Image (cartoon, rainbow over all chains, first blue to last red; front, side):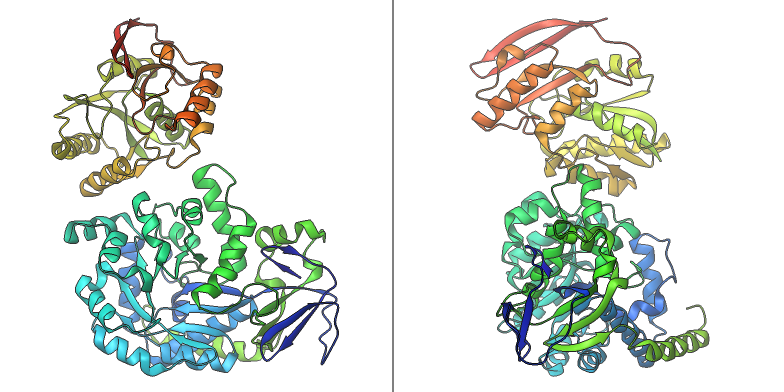
Length: 399
Length: 222
């Protein structure tokens, strides 16, 4: 077994009521033979737009502003059925590549909740304040989704530049307890200067002034200034999406080391399938390290950092004790084909997870102690969904 | 990509320019901003009027832009410089910003307005290592001013060697100044670099301005 702290060999992991109760030599209860498998904590995809799977490959070569325009035009044609089929395929892809929890921003959180319970994957989603949905309605509708063992509502706000400060502060005034806002922040150069011009402050400074940081999961932060990093310490988490940032040529540089040293809870996300285009968190971990090394010309960010960001830090964002294989942590586990980790030496296991493997090595997935995926189990369903998706897309002109 | 490079003649702008060339960028011009005040927030002032010698040594066209050096007006002066760069065919601006977000963000703000991209290859690089690598990669520079408590002032006016770098690093650690002089602790003038066609011989005088402030005034370059 392996988590970001290291590797242990030939141990038994005991699970009771969805939680790890013992890690060691004991054998009790029903057994699952994992002798040809490596066990790791489940991966958290902290930012995606699952239903955008329908737009994967639709427009790959535009910078963010042009890209977004094309996406919004295409999304105007989306039906509930198209969103559901796309989200279901995305859930199957995520689960079968080792993702046990994801945070989604789109227009169909009711469907995400339904899929989360159907497939047994943790999810956080909510209605998005954007184009026509006002803050009061978004918060009310998001709350009405209700929390379950697997699903947590989150208020989605597209961005400061898209909705304006007034909408954001109205959301803030409606929040109670531990409710959270999931929002794109400081993604592009255009964004930070338009916000500065309009409000006199850079985006994170503005969120700080408005007392929003403790509620904010800020996604992207490629153009965050040095003096804003400290302000993010009280955030439940920030999310880095390296592939999407590079693909959309946003040109910033996520200050991973500086944020880590400041004690900010860094998580990782793939972003949506239209801007990545994969939902595989193994690939995202690898890309995150490579981009840091390419940008900063040093090897400070290591495999352990991104493994922790994608496991323990992600669970922290969900306010769930998870991401480590130890008693008291939720039994959200991924079982990998041992023979894909070659050469199979303990001191190389974390390296293999980040630099070598992809989600194709996932054999089984356990969430809350329940086996929710075993290789091949979704093949038939997937085939039907793909056919359905293609049929719907064929009926939509220019998508 | 066609670029113009902000160029003060110091080590950072020279190295950033080199890296941009190694990236395959085509350099349309160097831009030297001449601030009228020594305490400019954005631009180096010491000896920048000698950058024409360096531009000549590299065979690159140089654009001079005068700036008031006043904090509020400097960005307008920069805007004029970037407009010239754009008119010369540049699509991006190269800068030697190391750690100062004041510099990086302001450069980006103006570049964004003018419609230019930016490239800051030295951004957030390890400062000690950067200083050591400059020497290792063949960038030779003179300290033209220094104003940090604990700085080895006997190095002012001297071409910096490897052992000088170690002394600077040691003092920087001890007295808490930035070893690459990001906070304006010292300013530099490059006399030799891999892309220079010839070495510049610099003559000048060292002056002690105050207890913790020394300058090297360049008088002649040949």
